[in-house]
Image (cartoon, rainbow, N blue to C red):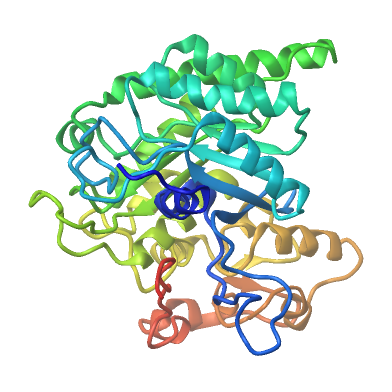
Length: 417
């Protein structure tokens, strides 16, 4: 293999990292300071830099790269699988450390997202990843954010070391079901992935408990663990996807499950679908995931709105649940508890909190609700206000047509040119 420059490696390995949705970048219009007659300042196309969001809402710029896109595994859906004919490259530990520090000192980034194909062995790959984080933290006193993708087949002690240096760890669950993992990622083991998640969850919980008793207790992955699931590569339904997510949240304390719509790859196996799933399916799964985590919905409630286990693509799952359970509405915005208000389509958690705060001082009219939210179109049939009652509107057979815009909105591709 011809020797590659650092820039060439960065082009290859940053592009290969774009399939990691757990650190999704924004889809900004491509602009570069080198374009145009007079030049300019700033660029949205800087190689390997993406944006993630901290729990407090801050946008964080991260250098998002792979250590290498060489891989000894043959995951059918992965462009970096061993039989893939893609251009290969590999960073050394020194190169990743230098790149991170150089980018950080130029104020391009606030942290590092590092993943890797598996070379030589899972333990060797994990050692390389951990060594990058160790050198950044111990040799250079790097205080920025570090997110490491861990290898579940790696030695548990290496994964434990990773947690001492990283803010967040993630292990890809890969597919919604064990049968899907066996079919499309034969070297991986769903039970082992979950065991590693379980061990990580215990370590994270223990570290938090120790920190409550002593500020000198060591920190272990303070931002928790996350995972990524590929959707549409096998025949798993949305109900299966959400059931798997609910189990991961409840059993292992995951902070986040990311959904990545399967993207067709060159020279793909005939077992894979020729077309990607609708990106709106991915979007509906994220909306459903949000309902599970923050709005008190159960998988069963959301699944009851599905046809053949698939979420409706023409309306969001919260509206679909409301249409299915009309007997729960209308909800009085001046009296209803927070739990009931959270189930009103179009009312987010922040708006609900503002409504509750406002109604302590006055009875809320429909116009008051309208001032607190973006649109009343979706909300009106489901609420009662001081001057508003939907009467027969909620029972109309054409309620969906009155609420859902025609044509429905479509989600743009993250990688569209």
